Amino acid sequence: MTDHTSNDTDPRSEGPDRFPRPPGATAVLALEDGTLVWGRGAGASGEVVGEVCFNTAMSGCQEILTDPSYHSQILTFCFPHAGGTGANPEDMEADVPAVRGAVFRAALTTPSNWRATVSLNDWLVSRGIVALCGVDTRALTARIRTKGALCGVLAHNPDGVFDPDALFARARSWSGLAGLDLASAVSTRESYTWDQTLWSWKDGGYGRLESPRHHVVVVDYGVKRNMLRSLASLGCRVTVVPCTTPAADILALNPDGIVLSSGPGDPAATAVHAAPVIRELLASGKPLMGVCLGHQLLALALGAKTVKMELGHRGANHPVKDLTTGRVEITSMNHGFVVDRATLPAGVVETHTSLFDGVLEGLAVEGKPVFSVQYHPEASPGPGDSHHLFRRFADLLAA
Image (cartoon, rainbow, N blue to C red; front, top):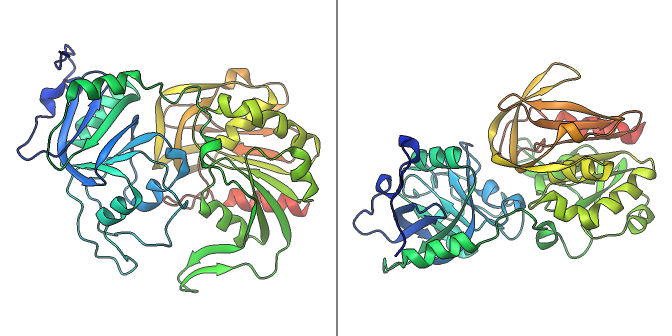
């Protein structure tokens, strides 16, 4: 039998006795280090495996759960309450959620928001997302911070019957995110156009681009819809193409500029097919902007390297300093890999840095209309401090 105890002396790292099984438990999270986190099941029944991480945002639950960058992850929400805003068809960042599962502190509440069309629990069921409620998410978050990203299995069985040894075995046998090209799993299969603009109170919802000034091609590595809306709101007619589209096909669309989108997985794995394409796009001289995974892929195409972080950045309250202006912005983030600044080649400069842990958060190519950031200027959810980066890109298109 598996030893379900822990020898850690740090109280933040205690074993399964910190997460005792309550009466009526119908779900459990089994971590590869031998920890069992018991609670009540929510959402879909079933069993999923993934990397267990946490997000510190206080709002935007539906947007977070539909961010393609969470592919193959089990997400712990630090904010204790969820469900009050419910869910609706408009706040989807992608058609099909890529997240494997979700962990909440309290039971999911009944929605009390005028835009809600369904409860969060019913939405989770309809989307096949397994969830766990009623656990000490502060202790679980502290454990992840101490141990680093852990593989885990989240199981929800209304009968409350589980085989912990089998769950541990599955968690320990999962490969993890390193070496996985997940962008190919979430990218669109066919090109499409986009003209929906940002949501506004004045218009009572999303608008439509009526008089485009520029044409932008977005390479979809796991794009969020709010990124497309942000571009459309600045007068950009957007064409979204699959992540495996050859450079010649992208340039044949005659874009004024190109955006490399956010997305999931190990950037080094995706770069096997993406980096040669990006190098051809760079040679075209067209303005180019990278976001999150797109930022990492740009760095790899330029000759830098990426590394997996022991503890990723996920939340809507991450301070970043713009080294060119001295301005500090509060940003939305979702990444578990980072560009190694020591490997930046000549002519590529660091432009932004994290004020949490000092990692590189942005770069630019000297003398060329090329820049990228590790965080999410489109937010959704998150503050609008960094929306100006889309205006900066639009200005390059007009130059």
